[in-house]
Length: 344
Image (cartoon, rainbow, N blue to C red; front, side, top):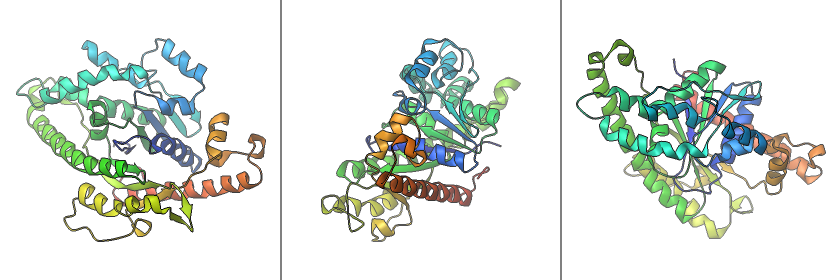
């Protein structure tokens, strides 16, 4: 039985995706859930958030097989097989599969494998390549008895992200309150639908062809490619009387209809305000000076203490942040469970 993979994704950057993954990973871990974080963004920002620079340098400068996501999949580029992941333990319940700027070199291999995976023969190797991220993440989950895998990826619709998304059970879409996030949402929904359909066709072909391969190859397991949207998160640009400022309100209020039409496929979405929309998992507040404070002390903002400088109004903001992320973690977990996540 596989561990559910939750990916935070928007092809528009600058929406706080990596920060969300980082804080939710810590919150899930503190709530007693065992978490694997997979940094599959070639920029490796999530790894930089978790680890000191010297620790990252030691990983990248070393040559240990499986020490990064790239070193797990790189053997496939040399007609070898995957290397087992070597995880970094960050907490009793939290483990990191480090990212690697070298991962971008795997993009061409994935691009070449995509059309080959619909060929008439030798489907094993291209499908092994395309499902590599899922296999590595599941190996990491098995090593740690994880309840959930959180995947962080870059803001694009390239081959790396396509392979992560076909390995994904659930998708959360972070959005900014602006025209560009709205346009990104319009692109994202049809793309997910198309990838889901194309991957289902490849899985069906493999079911017909796999027994023509060796017993070892025929045992290849593929991810189902659910990519089920759990909802969206909206950034709060400015607040006045608990509402977004007028300059952003026109974009915020278009999100519910666009999400339903482009992501959920509803032909006639109802008119509903963002703050009343059940598809909106949360409005992510600006925590302002808490963010650099958390980065400086390399801890989530809701774990900052007076020793870190969180005193007075900062202390109140820390408590509020803890409540916000605990509520968001509970909401996401409940929706995963409702949708049938095995470990939720």
